[in-house]
Length: 460
Image (cartoon, rainbow, N blue to C red; front, side, top):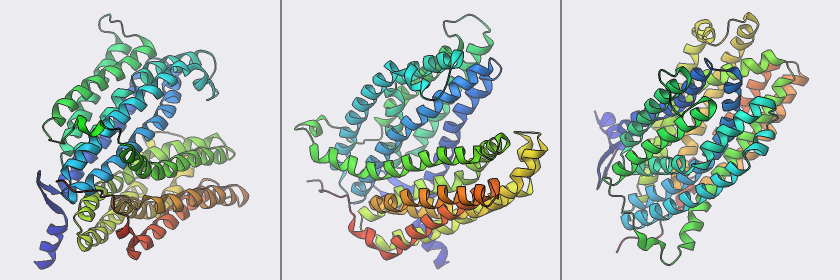
């Protein structure tokens, strides 16, 4: 009974906003993440009934849009880490000031970058080697979506802020509404039960903008009830130190994520030397494995929130117990789901392809991915703990060299030079994930993160 009570203690936090629990944070975040991923999938499925060129255009534009979204997510993540630690320390006023500065900062940056990308939509899409009709369609879609990028930027920021206050259900509901509106409008554009101004790929772009605008409106109404403490006083005089702190916390994970994203493009290029069947197999497998590591990924994000609160409150032993518990849960989830994918590989792959060549190529990779998911569980949890504690520079210092010197280098050595093909590449991915995971675990065990506090001052 004592063990069960101890576990309940580390899985919940008593806050001025009420009790925050691990499960209460996790389930809405899981549903929200699924819905966000589903939004792009639904658009592609519906567009596939309209035109292959339309699918290619939206798919290409979405790749670049995802890179932009990573930028907004990283700024929001940095803001959330600062807010969590200061809420844990009881610094509600400072947390509200950080949220206010982040709101203005995110809005300003998204307007500037969105306008620039909208103006240069055609050359940006041309850099992706698109030509002819696909280039024109992709540029049209990209121009529309980036012109009003502020909606997605603010939705992302507000979603992270409400999670800090334990209100993850708000972001989940907003994501659900956004998906439903987007799906209905996409169906209207493609199947045209009655005439509307929304047509073709441009219509799909406007469907996304309209759904995001409605979602943002709901988010603004909902966040007013959270009592974040937004205040214009935080902007006078210009809070240079606070802006520096936000970027100092956001840039290291940003560099790590950018490096990882570029390395994935390079790994795809290496796999392309093995033939187009290997590229298709990687695309299918990546889609399948997303749902394998989704639970662990969401658990890592929830762990970041709770660790931030605990570190801010000086509850270091509680943070260490949460770390040990969630590592076990994360590994168990990833391994069980990986094994299930292997056990039911044929019906799972059958949803994507009927090619026996590709199916035969995928099966050994699915076995190798069990090791990848073990390493990924360590990265999700240990990385989340270090970020929550404010020790994100170490994660960057480990991640950047690892993804290039291990993942990319050994993908080429094992996959191409040694002739192991796609399996060799996946072994390299496993080596990278495990190396980074072990390094981050050792960093956490060293307790050096205890000196990385982001708390600046208490409320008066």
